[in-house]
Image (tube, rainbow, N blue to C red; front, side):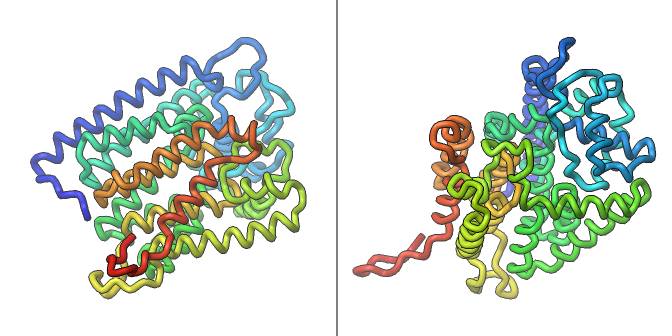
Length: 422
């Protein structure tokens, strides 16, 4: 069941109210973080952590591109030295801490204009830019998906209260930005513009761990316009970046991507932040790599099967054009959960992507029946640190596996004349 379309005359005021409320909320959030979060408080003493959190390595990368040294983007000696150059970044912090350069050259090229600003000021500009994701999401939900203003405001407030989303902002991460891209893709797919949706999804080249499952699901659904448009968009972005970075930087980046599967073995890996299937299995297997990879292969196979069942891959739907199943909320639930569970590197702040689920479900008019799962995800992320410290494993992947199993469960069979159903 689809939410009724609002008359055109009513949509503009509704959109204005929703975007206005989200903008006000974004301003409040920025002020609170700037005033209270350790990552954004200016300190005269040596800091325990970097000002701006993860933004430091992005600013350093943009700085290298801006000064014509992009070939050094993935040279640890250079980037570590720059991150701890107090004359450059304006503060001192522990030499043992660092932020690895993990994004593609195109991203550092895109952010290089911001790196021309003095670092402390750039941090606050960056925080404000990240917070603009909230009114953008409100506009997409109200204008693009035609949800009512009350629903939009409730979802935005829930998103701000969602621990991963707030953690993302406090750490200078871009999770809300990536959520905005996914919601835009969802809105375009829902309106039948799947080629444009693929073009937008090509920007996820900047966060490649969020790409494979979506592309695989679109291939399984035979959405070729999406797949080819995404590939063309990503290739265009990569080619355009060569105006600012050398080919060698992309070759170096391939090496970074190739090592993501063993990221949990690197120094400084925070197991308490990891939220994927691998993190769950790592707590059970410890350092035994053969056992870990064997269990991961079996677990991944189960997840893929459940994804297919949840999204009804292979099930004919005669009510769809050309017998092609619609990309309903079940498809997006399977895709988001599969992306999180199967990713080789997925931290707590990346769980902000779960924000797409209430949006997709609300568009189908099924938010009430899915509310127990939404609450369970919220609670699991809120108590994650306590559970990891006391029981030794992250609870969120367990909840996500249970949710995927629920949506992927087989249909009930006829028993004693009772009708089948889900």
